[in-house]
Length: 307
Image (cartoon, rainbow, N blue to C red; front, side, top):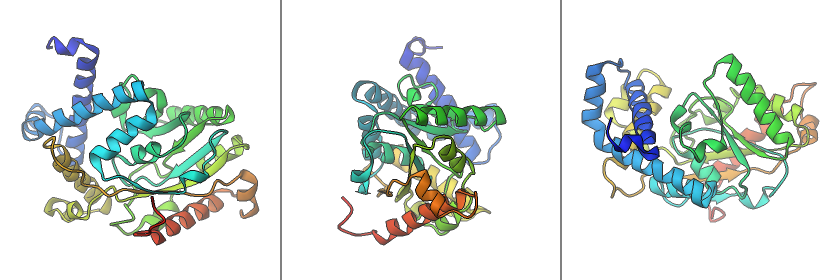
């Protein structure tokens, strides 16, 4: 181990390198062997270094300037200034549950970069990349998708909401189609987890806000030959995202490739959701709000109402 690895940043860099390496092997459907690790490092080593540099700076900025400024740094590194709608109607305090689609690798940063609150926690599942970042991890409820951790994260989220905090979750628990360049975003919302309804019932004072993000994935990378030959849409999206990430970070002077947009819906109370629910089932009402938010978001595409 190098002397640098004995420093806090050095240890963090080693960890980020290992997680990124495993992630690329997963995306490219390659087994993890000594040879494949060497090959991927050889092919994408420069990208690794640049991504890690940005990640370490991101963590420092979160610690020094706050989560909003840190997330703005990442957003502007990966995309043009986001077009935002509806942020002005978000309550500055009180329990708030943000439920969002999940189109790509920096959508969380786009959302948090325009959220007028510092008391946010993000439910992150299955991607341990941020777990060792000393400042960023303070804003995360992490689950590895095991039943035990799923229950614990649910309890932590409800407790945090009941304490007046703000929680951001991605209810499908997986990557969703980017609605600016892919079909299926509307139908994907129907796959949202029942945990959303459960959280609202257990934190009855919370307001729910549907969030829609798009423009994270560029069309040209969906059309990359390696992406196009993938047997399933989610694999195609995963590979396209990787090649966009590679192009963005293979050099430090590459301009932002994404054109993000984010819309925050009107805050809705449990009572308002219940009025539109059928029987005791709350989730269909939540899904209806989110789908209406997606429709409104798409209708604003190219509009001057986006700031």
